[in-house]
Length: 120
View 1 (cartoon, rainbow, N blue to C red):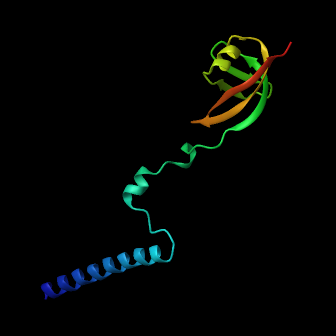
View 2: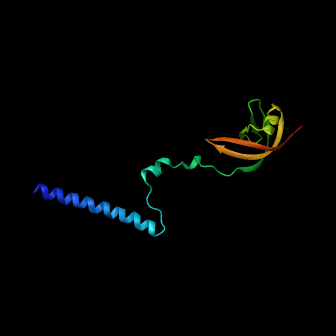
View 3: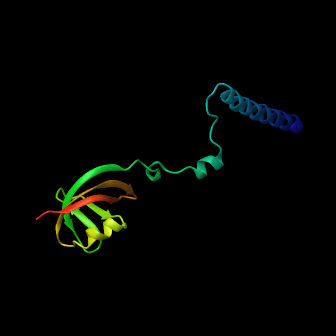
């Protein structure tokens, strides 16, 4: 009796696994994505880490010696370490207007300066 119950359970598991394989194949043939494998899920990047296209902005604010600018609206940006960015950092404690592209990673906004002028 126990052998029959075990055999029935094994057959049921086998049938269910075949059905699951058939569903994945059917999804692939219908142009849909098959369910993600464990490996695909483990290697996928979280949405917040995915890169976004940099937005070009104009920022007016005060530069500090640590390579940051605090905009008039209170937003803080790290100035990207480029040749023109180094020129801007030399204007520490002065008010400037920057044109540049902004990217954000892990909550830190970075501005890559395209052009700048000191505001007197």
